[in-house]
Length: 92
Image (cartoon, rainbow, N blue to C red; front, side, top):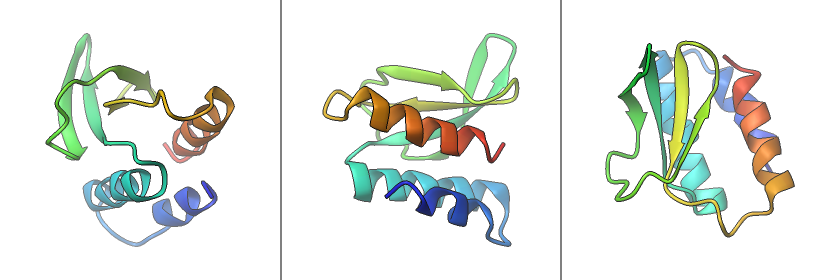
């Protein structure tokens, strides 16, 4: 199912719009609320995605400039989530 992630990144749209769509896909396909951040040293600043995350529980550094914050992934298998993160990372 996560094979749609690379397709979303191939669109000819501004990066923030693509990341919004990736977050919407994560929400619809996996029931995961997420947002992307720009990383400035130790500071992670919201960039795109779901602004309504109540308690951000997990942070994943995608590269030195971008990160992914998610509310909860407890309902997913670790292998499945790792595959999703790898597909996202490979597009940065």
